[in-house]
Structure formats: C-alpha cells, structure tokens
Length: 198
Image 1 (tube, one colour):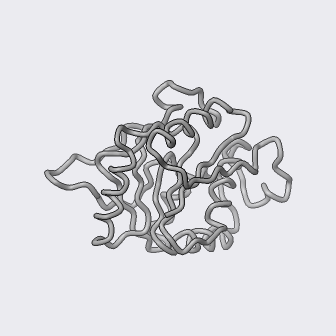
Image 2 (cartoon, helix red, strand yellow):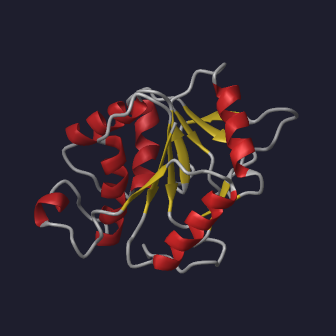
Image 3 (cartoon, one colour):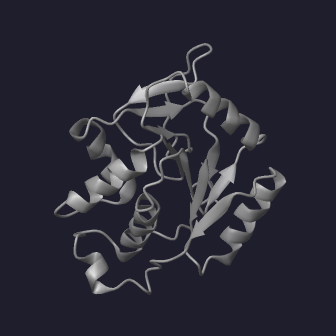
C-alpha cells in the first residue's frame, strides 16, 4: 500500500496539519508530491492543457506524477487539505479488506460538494460513473499505469482533474466506486483552509 499526498509547497500549514493527523493515526509510510507548483511549471508542461487555470494544471500534474510511478499495488492519494475522519486507519484497513471481494478500479472516498448515495443497510460501496473529487481516492493494483497511459495518449485536456475523471469511466471501461461513509473531509470546502485553486 502506497500513500501519496499532493502538496502546494507555500501552504505550510496544510502540510503540518496532514502530517500531524497521519502521525496521530500511526501512519508513517507516505510521500509528499511537491513538484509542479504553479510558479515552477514550464511551458512544455502546459502544452496538453487548454482553458483551465494554472493552479488546476499544477494540481493535475501532481496527480500525474503519482500515476507515472506505475505502481503495481494499491495506491492511496490524498490532497493536502484532507481532514481525516476519526479512526481513519482502522476504517481504511476495513475498506481495503472488503474491497478484496469486489471488482473495482477506483474508490472515491473523500467528501466533496456534499455528494452522497442514499445509504442502504450494511452497504459501503456504490457503483457510479463519476468521480467524487480528488481529495481522497484509492487506485486498485495496476490502475495507476492505466491512468498514466490514458493521460499520455490524450491530445488535449480542458478540465480539472476531478472533472477529467468523470469522462474516463465509460470511455475506458473503468469501474468506479464511492464509499459511504467517506474517510476524509475537504478542509478547503469546510472552511478550515482557503482554496488554493479558485
């Protein structure tokens, strides 16, 4: 299991908070993705993108940097404004255990825009064709390589990464799940942080 956190380096308070949360959960195996800050992006990095903000390109490329690793294992991706739910690690491990008996490619388990399924008794995972934001999501084994290949083969991209994911499930036959309940809240959405994108 690999945990990666996309981080915009000027926002030191976000990094400090997510590190503290992970330490409180006794999670030590994680890596920050800190390259591609918007101030450092080169023209060649933006050539594939059109009609989206530089801040959105920056975040998109940080996610792509994770996909580029092409890890053949479970990959957990958090953004730096993630606020972990209580008992995060145990809940995450429980989800990963239950996912072993299910066919899936990407699990979106972050809270975003109050997007939810109506919860059914004893049901945690719900199949969908849309993302639920990229504050937290989990890639099944081998899926990071699939997504990286999709990115490389795209001629142009005109959407932020969360909306880009919406177009992929049907087009590339990827199986998306949402979890109920979610495992993180988005700090920039619930007022803990100011948005770094908008």
